Each structure stands twice: as structure tokens, then as C-alpha cells.
Image 1: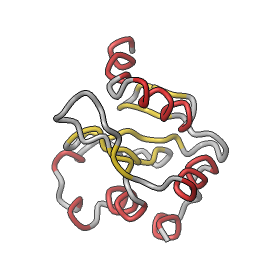
Image 2 (image 1 turned 180 degrees about the vertical axis):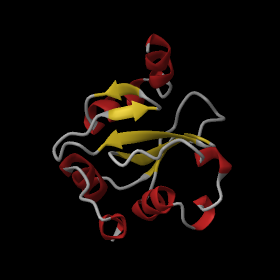
Image 3 (image 1 turned 180 degrees about the horizontal axis):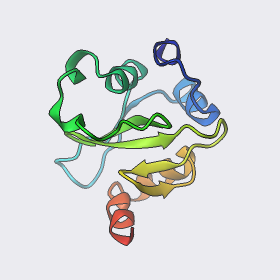
Image 4 (image 1 turned 120 degrees about the horizontal axis):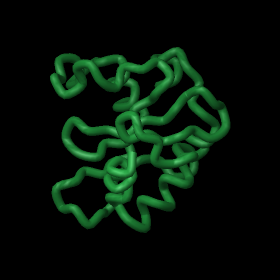
Length: 124
């Protein structure tokens, strides 16, 4: 349904993840972080700027690249994206910084350290 709403095909790795694991929260060391793998309806809503995201000022001017898909909420108004240019493994980005070569690499890294991508961003 989300793919139809967006008119895109999700990378195979993401489709498999949603089918086998689904979505939800990842417990981390920062009690203020949300760390949420978003459900498919929310992914579509944020991409299309519908529902609660229609007038969200945090989205103005960012997360608008057609080849990127928001899938993970770090904190209020801060999201991670997947590169849609490959149908197999999608690179994971924190703003413009690549933080993982695949969704599985991201899951492994965030399981070890829920804030690892903050360090990756600083390295730039």
C-alpha cells in the first residue's frame, strides 16, 4: 500500500525487513531519543507531507530528495533516510552523511550503540 501511494518500489532489503521484523522502537542510551523504525503508513505520510506531517515546519527544505526515503525517526523532526537508487541494499543517511552501506549494517551498528551515527556525522 505505501509503495502504491508513493509510486515507488522499496529496496528488497527494506521490504524483507518489514515482512520479517516490522517496525517499532529501539531502546537506546539516550532517554530523550525516539529511535523508531517507522511503520509504512507513516513513511508514506511523511514523504507525501500528509496527515500530521502536512504542515510540519521541521520538514521544510529537508528530506525532499526523490531518491531518499525517510524510514527512521531519531528524535522530533530528525530522521534517517535510505537511498532508493539501488533495489538490493540501500545506503542509510543521517542528513547528507552516509552512516551505513545497508539497512542490515545500520541495524547491527545501532544495536551496539544507539547513537553511533552522531559520531559518523562529526567525522563527516
